[in-house]
Image 1 (cartoon, helix red, strand yellow):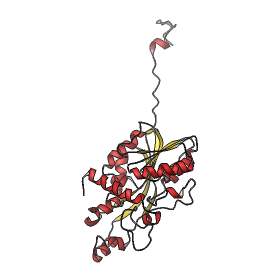
Image 2: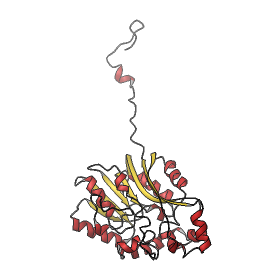
Image 3: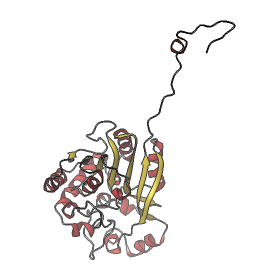
Image 4: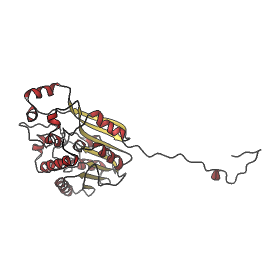
Length: 295
């Protein structure tokens, strides 16, 4: 597989192209990145259409879950969406935060930022902003967010440990995240792991489920919970680009699983320091003697 910067450039190029496609084209492929299947398959995405705050113009059909549904967003919260695309999850989050909250979307694809800003302008949201930048080096200060959400994005970043560290940095003490992502159980065939399109399509960049959860725990997050899990099936007509008929048959029979999971975790909260007893303060005005002692 390519080097880290090459992978980032690859993803940026693919998602620039995706931004110019319609939702139907994106839904017919792996996260919108691969050549569409001969049939219309909603391979990964969940249906947002009944979700409050949903905006059809901002839905490019690129997600693999509904993280905002599980994110426990409260009125007045500051929410950050990693890989915000055209703004769909930001607008759903804004419904939860209300006008008194704030939502920040981060994306490294300029055309996505343009589309998201245009959508926010049409909706009249002055508390939703979009910043161009990498999610492994977020253009955000420390301890800013009450909640972080992300939808099928971390698997596209080569250094996932660095992203987890950035999430920890940006969250307030006691803050939490809800992230939907693609993970693996078992090993993908080499032809899938090494293909650039499958990387941009959220599959080849996915890591083992156990490793994914361990990265979160190792960074010190608490109460790590899988809120939702669903299997992902890649249609045979997409697999046929990479595998022979026998290999497809074996792949469909073996123990390898591709899953969408929505993970929740909390940053450790503020610690309350125990009050220190200062002798000069508690003994002021008192006298001590062998008979009375000290109070």
